[in-house]
Amino acid sequence: MTTLRQPRRHAQVLRYLLAGGLSAACNFGARIVLSLWLPFEAAVAGAYVVGLVSGFFLMKTLAFPPSSRSLLRQMGGYALVHVYGGLQTLLVSSLLLRFVLPALGLHQQADMIAHAVALLALALSSYHGHRKISFR
Image 1 (cartoon, rainbow, N blue to C red):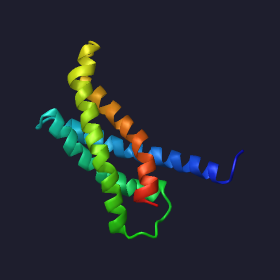
Image 2: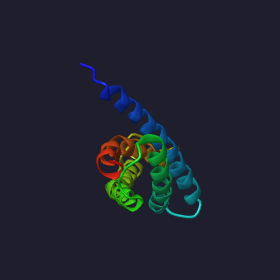
Image 3: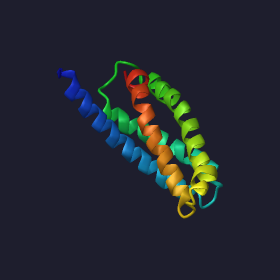
């Protein structure tokens, strides 16, 4: 049975994916630049902060309806969801780069592949946290 809420939820998910994609592009680009000066894990962590800030404002304006919660509370909820997400991104990208991709014989652009897969995992895991915590 289809309800009126279902099409709205699908549209919200699409807007979330758009905002998340733009945020991930900021994150990914920042990691490439930071990798010029920093080791991989430090570059991933720094890029995550860039993605976090850009993502908050993109999600707030594109994906979720206005909230009655204060901006500070929304930012706190967003940060809370991303504490988990940051650890997940760092762990997944590092495990892929250091162990999984070499075991599969993938060495070229391994840092790009590892980081991209980790960002995809983050997009899938964070939607519900933002809907229920950050921008409710």
